[in-house]
Image (cartoon, rainbow, N blue to C red):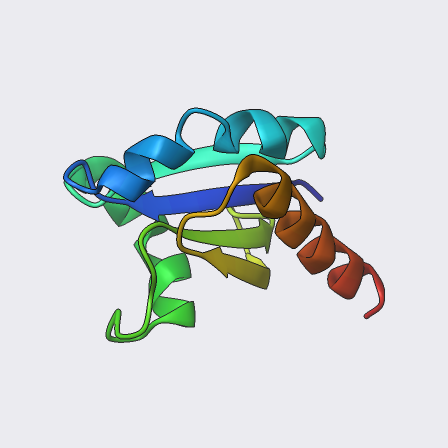
Length: 106
């Protein structure tokens, strides 16, 4: 079962852009696939929309960017956790690790 980080962001978001310098690299270091979903890219957004709406049915309360950590994002997905907003590289890594550790405890 593949695990992935799905980044939901906007092309107009400065924090989203800043995170793009290291978010994919950190996900790869943690053996996670990385899927970048820009809200303006309707084709990619439609493909992963059901995952976002499972966590945020009306998109209320999501951060910019919102990272959802999932099992099997291409199939019968399971959301393991999330990281919202911008964080320094080390803190972002620690937050992802925390989600993965919590998921492995289940």
